[in-house]
Image 1 (cartoon, rainbow, N blue to C red):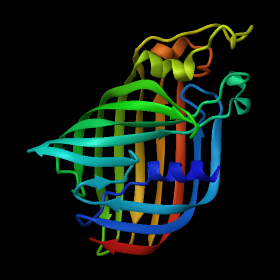
Image 2: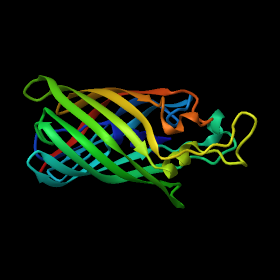
Image 3: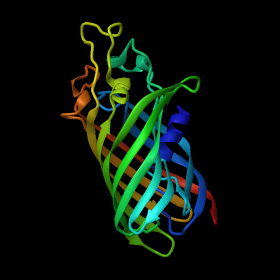
Length: 268
């Protein structure tokens, strides 16, 4: 449970910093309510003390996408390396998946081509359109399975709303249109003959549109403290996996907020 929360914080904390490169360490508490998987009518709630980590340089950043590595730039066009994490789910804790295999941790990694229409990656205010492609693997840290690809266009915009000498209050918006391969969607939503029953019919998905999402995040940052929160809406109507018996609703809402005290700061 603790390690799940650590990953949640790393995914959600934004690190668009004031200088070209810095690292911050701290500790805090964070609350989050996140669905077991998209389309599930059950969620996991977290309220635990967690570590706080924040890093950004000209080559790498840990931010809302968990990890970004800057690979190449030509004028407003940037090629980045981005990553993401999906939390593991014990099927015994989810009614729709009862009796099925557990969902392992899912790690995604791949390139993202971003076109900046406002600012650049290290600007306080910036906006870009993006095309991302990520390879996904699932693991229980014993075995590793290839579960296909996830890809699609997105848009991101962040702007400071209030700035003082050593503090900043900012807002960030993100929208994604998601697509995935057959193997990826079937990892989450397929039902084979052995797993089927009277309320869970056999199902297999095809590649294609897998949903869309929009999110907003608010952050108040000072040299000693960080406060922030987010709301994310996921929409699955008309997606390829929508007919799966494991999809119990065509939308999900994820929320989270927290506070952290910074006890170590280093500029490079």
